[in-house]
Every structure is written in structure tokens, then in C-alpha cells.
Length: 93
Image (tube, rainbow, N blue to C red):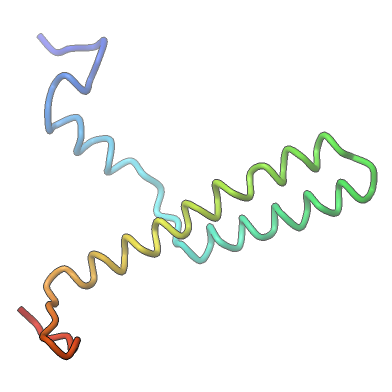
């Protein structure tokens, strides 16, 4: 009988399902969304809509940090098979 209460108790099968459901949004799109929410939030604050401006400006930091995380994760996976020698030069390992 499958476990309907906590799918994480199943094991690796549930972990694969959770990772495959992530949307395919690039780091560039996330960074643009973060900067635009910051700008729109500032404009809303200047026009007198403080609550809406605070809400949108508060969304900027999570968007920008997730963009940085995706960028560094892509760099790390790119350099997995590369190693360096004493002088710091990369070579395929």
C-alpha cells in the first residue's frame, strides 16, 4: 500500500518526482523579474501605494537569490569533470 500521507517516506522515487516538476525558468529570466519587481515596487512607493510597493519590493530578493543559485549551480555542474593543475589551468579529467 502506498503512503498517501507523506510521500517523502517512500524514498528516492518521490525525490525524483519532486525534482522533475520544477519549472524550466532560466537564471536570466529570474534576474530580470527580480530587477523589474524592485523597480515597479519603487515606483509604486513614490506614487503613494506603499502596501503594494512593499509587497512587490519584497519579492525582488527571493527572485534575485534564486537566479544567483541557478547560475552558480549551472557553473558547478559545468565544471564537475574539470580539474586544475598547480598553475590553475583547467584540464579534462
